[in-house]
Length: 335
Image 1: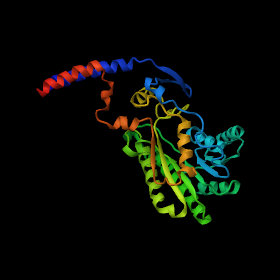
Image 2: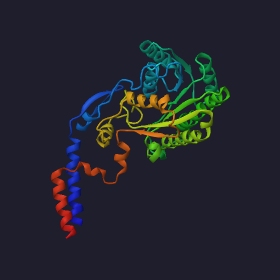
Image 3: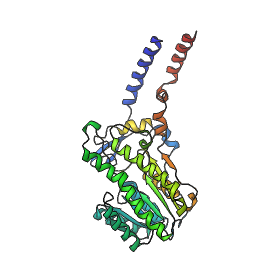
């Protein structure tokens, strides 16, 4: 058996050296250059850029999106607006919001409002919800997308660092959800709530422990309210995205641009996700087509979670020739 294990270690070293020497393709990462190497299987999993729902699927509906000025939030807002929704986007930076609102509205022809809101502050949330109802009416779609995160060894975290992330992610989502939920209950109006979490909310993850803890709390909140507030016509679901290809997406998670290649290598679909894919799933879950889906947490990650979870999944790197050799070793061991 020691011979077999030694041979395996030698195989892994050979496989690893070949992987590290693979050809890389650069793409923009803010002011840095990131490197992307799509696997050959990515050709089977090409992302579609257009909306999957029929036009006017959200005609006459109001959508409220936190963190709607950039990234995934901007992508979801764009999709909802194209499908007919009147959108209200919220975050702390009003100038960014107003620029995004004008950009999206000019593309879709539907009004997008910008409302300043610090989700960490209950008073700011209450004021933003009042403005939302004043300018557009009660929402039938609520997207909790505002988030904060950075990588750090947990022993380096200060109390303030922990509080900053959990205040934005968990408390912010709770403040927005409860404030809007109470208004909808009083008005006797139904709505679909959606939270954007992460795949490590389920498993936990080192070096992002505040985010992992807060996102897990968000999922628990969604499932709890799905059970409690269904009687009021309110639905609650969550999406767990894997790594999504956006400019600057990893500025705090991969500032040196060295981990992305590793991410792609472990994703069975062989590529990163796109904002449009998340937006399509988000619009579906918030649409009337998904009216029987509540309390669900949907993972959308190209198979990354399953790939990391299986104890023997790294064996996919073994070549046919290496398998032939190992099978012979195993047969000898059995005999």
